[in-house]
Length: 142
Image 1 (cartoon, one colour):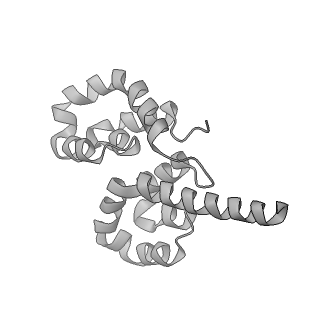
Image 2 (tube, rainbow, N blue to C red):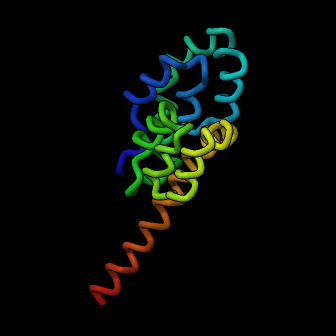
C-alpha cells in the first residue's frame, strides 16, 4: 500500500499542535478546530497527542487514497503558504490558486475551509486521476 501521510510531518505539525495543525493533517477536522480554539485543550491535549500520532497516522493511511498529489506536500504548502494559494496551485486548481493569491486566501475564510477539507480534496483528485490513468491503460492494452 502506498503511503499517504507521514509520522514525521505529523510530528513537525505537532510542534504547532496548539493550533490543531497535526489533527487537521491526519483528517480530524472537528478535533483540529477544538484544538485551534482552545490552544490544544490548554496544552494538555497537545502533550497527549505526542503519543497518539502513530495511531492517527495508521488510520489516515487506511482512509485516504494515494496518488499523484502528495498529502504531505499539500499540507506543508497549506500550512505555511496557504493564504497565497500555493497548495491549490500544487493540486492543479489554478483558478482558485490565483483567487487565493489575490485575496489572501479569500480573506482567510477559504484558507480555514481548506484546513477542514484538504484530505478529501486530495483523495478526490487522486481517485479521478487514477481512474483516468486506468482507463488510458486499458485503451492502450485493449
